[in-house]
Amino acid sequence: MLAFAPPAGAQDRRGGTAPTMVVRGSGTFEVKPDIAILTVVVTTTGDTLERAAKAHEERATRAATALQQLAAEGVEIGRADFDLAQRSQPRPSTTAQKPEEPSFRASTTFHLKLRNVARTNDIVTRIASTGIIEVRMASFQVENESQALNEARREAVRDAREQAEVYAAAAGVRLVEVVEIEGDLASSTGAAHASLGVERSVKIIPPAVVSFRANVTVKWRIGPRL
Image 1 (tube, rainbow, N blue to C red):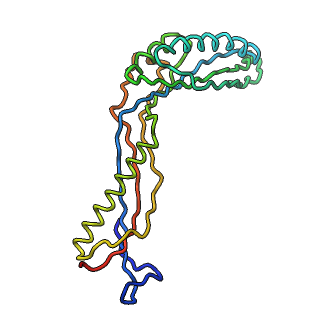
Image 2: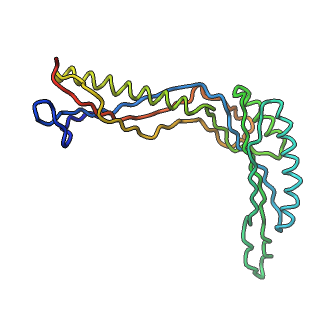
């Protein structure tokens, strides 16, 4: 984005308005992911709330034990979320069909962190092979995101300056000073993989890099060439 405009109230040495130039720059920084975030879940159903909860307690305990045994492989359990809800409503009774009893579902979702990203597929395979834990998602991140985002911001500013210098040279003017800098929200893009609960043979391949993007708008005061 390029714009030339005289700022309101700005005066040059001759008493007129000082012209400005506005340029929008973008920057991208790529870095190898060093953390894999796994979301896994244990689900238990029952025909009553009490039975579902009781049966789930034993399954969730087994699952937690299995996950804790992966600590030596670099797996950390971040948190566990428990949910208990009615799965379906009973059908109305008819003379031809016996009413279906309500079904309840209890689930515990574990959020895991794996620092050895290269072993993601092996860990997922081991978790899925327990037979009670379903892997819902694997995402790849960078632990020091702030540093990566700052690098993207620097690239955005460099891009804006490079564009401004090209425009200034083409227009026969020079960049005098920066008047204003406005940065947009920087963001990262990670890779995610769907559930392996059914297709356990699906191979998870970590992405080579995670991209961080930033945009910035810079306004320069410009003047005639010296």
